[in-house]
Image (cartoon, rainbow, N blue to C red; front, side):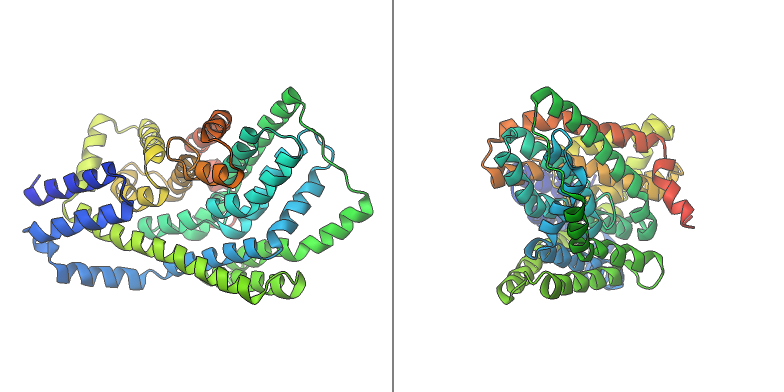
Length: 432
């Protein structure tokens, strides 16, 4: 440990304890390091060259603002409400129907946006309003909305998986396919839990549509649902790359909102652009700051040190996966998901490679792990989003969501120790 590295870590810890934005923390600590370091690779010219080279060659990063743009269009046009109506029609008269609708709508929506926060803030506001009007408890309503939103980045597309692919070199196509079964397992688990709670609390049944009305609604929903086909069909047919698919799907969503549902005006488009730029700007700042942070970590050989320390404890990959899962679950309770991805993933990747763990398998496991962090107290972002939308006290949401988190954690450990749950579909599709 040299002086520059000590100052680097102490500054980062101080910024974290002061609750400053994590991006600012990474930037400030990196500036202090470069100012006093004598390391030959720590010159600002070399860092700038490396940064520009790596960022310019990372074509896959362009997909991020495109998926953000698509999510904003979905939530601003009528697409989101059509998904909710279609899911409602599918569930019918089932006990606690709107709880099931919440989960099914999130599964459908996840195939379009790849963002948990987009699901919770857009689709979630509709779900919470409908459930509260039908007599569901406020805490449960918010909890199932937050828990089901975690499916968003698991079923393709997925913004966190894009960042993981950039950092690890794993195939983005394989990662997307690998998330399908885990995402569906979470959906099934949450619906089973909902069925038990609905009977226990006597939540209302849904309304079954007459067959003719169901067919009419289905046909109206097809343009919205077809965006999944445009996105994933384009990628796996080989017609477009994941980045190009993001642009294609965003353009398709725009056309559907304007010309089919006629629910997208100029002011809506302006707001979509503003929100997209804001979100992309925030993510870009995080990526830039995290690159400098990760560069320092790399040149100081910290990943190798961590790998050596952990391998000194055990070289059993199953125990190692348990340790990493527990570590990331704890980190997710206190640190933003994007910060965990950009700072800690590069540290553990050498360890994963040393143990011969499949990078696609590990990627899906770790993304699900971090999505759980979005719903875990005290700083789960989804908790604040749903509580803010509904005006429900946070402690009520936390009380209701803990059993749901337990359901998702069970799925996490299933996919951790049964890799075929992740790798079956990628291998079926011909990915290695």
